[in-house]
Length: 197
Image 1 (cartoon, rainbow, N blue to C red):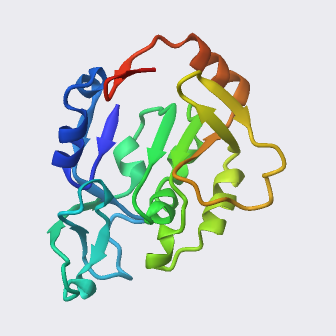
Image 2 (cartoon, rainbow, N blue to C red; image 1 turned 30 degrees about the vertical axis):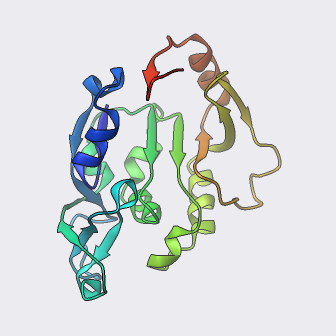
């Protein structure tokens, strides 16, 4: 498992006592469509907002109360490389459109059968149209689903293929719902944040 967290310490503080922590390689990076974005000013990450830190560009650094740290810029395809991911979770406080734009190869892998992504309007701060992002995800062959982790119930959301998205905490998409459902039903339990799932 690979985790790219804008600030490593936030992730480490939250999950250090969980079983899953031992499986994770953590790095501080920002994902863009291209490795060296030319159209935007240098990227930084807001600092001091815990798990809701977000990308801030150097031309915005003069704004009040904006503490920032510099980060390495890469694409998701760069980080994934030749690995064959099964599940991706993307939660970048509005920068999801840019992350997916730099993950074309990754999103097309047949091994990738699940995607959890936050699409709830934060992209507006960067001028992104999240309706287009939703449609792009569908073009990769994903279907929107709902999932209850406590009873491991996964179901496809009917009638939503072309009707746009709803602002939710996180959306779940699957490429092959029956295979994902079978894996969920047969997977061993594990503990996260003192809860057994």
